Length: 312
Ligand SMILES: Cc1cc2nc3c(=O)[nH]c(=O)nc-3n(C[C@H](O)[C@H](O)[C@H](O)COP(=O)(O)OP(=O)(O)OC[C@H]3O[C@@H](n4cnc5c(N)ncnc54)[C@H](O)[C@@H]3O)c2cc1C
Image (tube, rainbow, N blue to C red; front, top):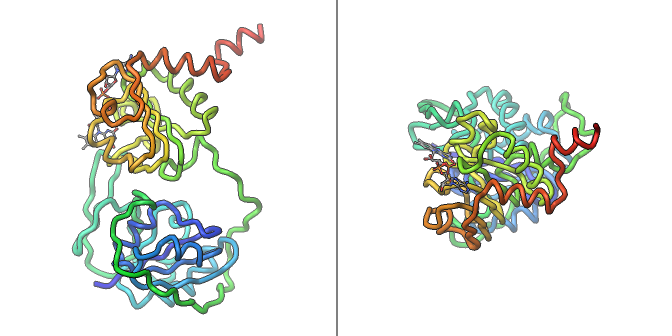
């Protein structure tokens, strides 16, 4: 069974999930997009064979056919489950005439496993033919899967096909409230130690002031206080922020195993010996609700109650 990874690159930046896709393809990778040379350098020895297709912009509809022609020789084509990867994968699968499996969390030669219903259900998909699949992002910074020397990049000579495609009107910066948690460099997380959905509204405002995205534990998403796309952990979104601020989170292994390797962790908890406090660089023994409220005050966050008070 042979495999190749196809990774969309923007201005030399590799998306979340790249290393997982490249590892699943035994280091064989096609980089497509802008400044692939910088992306190739960043991949270094995690790749064993490397092709670069330097093309402007992002045009999954027009890239699919030429890429399909190039990767058709491989049994499996793996893409990171990043936003661009998720756009390109179905088009590539359609061009190749192959089934597509999305959001794979585990892979074996004879099966792929995907998680469904916010991680409550794991579904095995048998591998009995040629496939395209996307891998649930874990990390692009992991040092895992290094081979000997970085391969010499080869140029993929191709031209985008004449095909209907989405038109890029403008590229906007990420919205912290909705951005893919896997790509957030700063994260604020809330757990069962917070007292209700209104506290999460307040925490979201604090996170925005700190330039961070907000996630939560499974207890919180199971209560319906936040959507499952905000769940951090092995069966939610696997993240890798530089900074993680945890409020009222115990640090169960299913949560921390999905945290990546943050440079700094700050934890606020009433229980000084819980795992999240042990992992933290800065462990603050305090009521997380009062801490969030005080942070909101210090950062000038106005609550709905404040706003209605001001209006009356
Ligand atoms: C198959 C499976 C998959 C799972 N996947 C995930 C996953 O992807 N992500 C995930 O997060 N979990 C997952 N879980 C659940 C996980 O095991 C834990 O139950 C969950 O992470 C605990 O969430 P929590 O820390 O919010 O709650 P708890 O474990 O209940 O911890 C609450 C914490 O809040 C503290 N606290 C209480 N009151 C206050 C206060 N006033 N101020 C400050 N601190 C306070 C407590 O000391 C405690 O440390 C999974 C479980 C299973 C079985």
